Amino acid sequence: MTRASLATIVRMPEDVGYPLRLPAELKAKLTVWARHERRSLNAQIVFLLEKAVDQVDPSVVVVEQRVARRDALQSEVADGRRPRPSRRRGTRPQ
Image 1 (cartoon, helix red, strand yellow):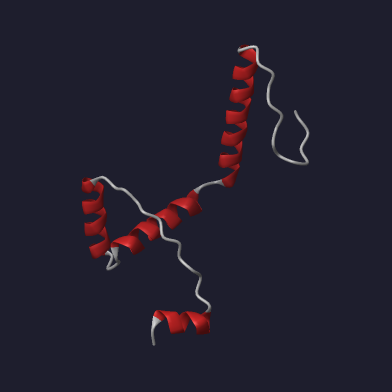
Image 2 (spheres, rainbow, N blue to C red):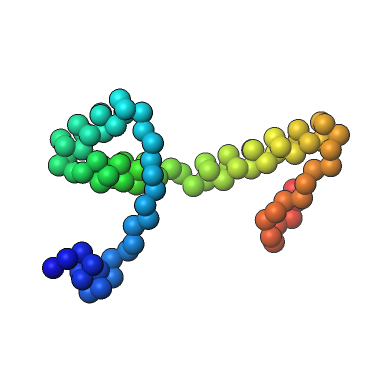
């Protein structure tokens, strides 16, 4: 049974292609690692990215976004410019 016919039965999620540029040395290391883990290079990269994303604490990302916004506002005020309003809906300025 082909992947296409299996996808109609199982409803597999569609993968999205993305061209990725890697330094040659990194690609070589990933290739060796993938072979050791008995995965394709693509499967190894996806595995590592999913593992890294799962380890990110969402609260850290939110804090970093708020710090970046604060820094941008401070810079605009210091330059004598009027700060741009937040683009998020339903929030009040702090």
